[in-house]
Length: 381
Image (cartoon, rainbow, N blue to C red; front, side, top):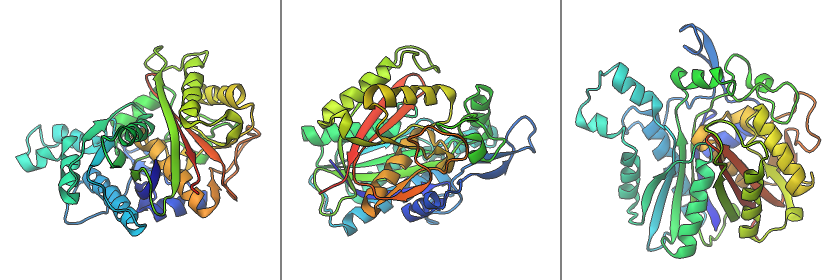
């Protein structure tokens, strides 16, 4: 399976080039916003998607972001020579997605809206709008597996293509849920940080990391069996569940290890062929320990480690979407992109941007509730 087109809306702004330039800058997308924390006027660091998008759509950041990233991915694929097959499917990776408008529906509108305004809240609405706009008639569904959702959607797309269920698949990954009511429970759990610049607070594989900063994004991929000018190939993938706890990682890490082993087997790739671990890299202690153990147990500490959440934020369902997009764009442009190192770090952690990237990447995503996933990416040609 190849990635033939990419579209993105992120905390950096609208468009995949805006995301790419933001990541290359080494500066976080997060800004200070009022209303986060215990005092309602207290400011917190959040990488929120800014206003923008198609002005002909309803004034909804969520709907505009979903349609904006999808349209960009389809247009990009067409510009690169893709033509739709007979059956084009759609998969949308979400968790809560449109938290802003659901909050306002209850707290501002008292649960009362005109039918047209209510219908846009439903997860089926953007899917229906896109299928109609593009004239696609293949299978269409939402996918949710906590912060593994993007990887899982790509794995399902690969299965659809392999089984002939679809000729091409538009994969969307969206999460615009960085409202104070969502952020603060994660802060209270000790997983998220909103009171400090992300590069100070979120330091995956480095000393002094306190957790992740919240981000928002909608990232889309047009994937197909073969493409004239693809960004990257998805060679395989796997997903599993710890079956252990709603929050905590199973302490032996065996299910994470097994998930990665199965992803490598599915891709027909040996561990010693993997050049890069594009990590979940949330900056929490348990994720750092799990992925450090993974690096040693499966890969003998050989691959270079990429961590992007200090820059783009943890975009929940869309987090792996952002990171897969960065890997795919990096293959095309010959650049390996990671957040800058700011403290003593794991020796294989990449410091910022460097040239030269042509090996195989394993992209891990570890979601709450023990949702593990890994996809294996590689250059084309």
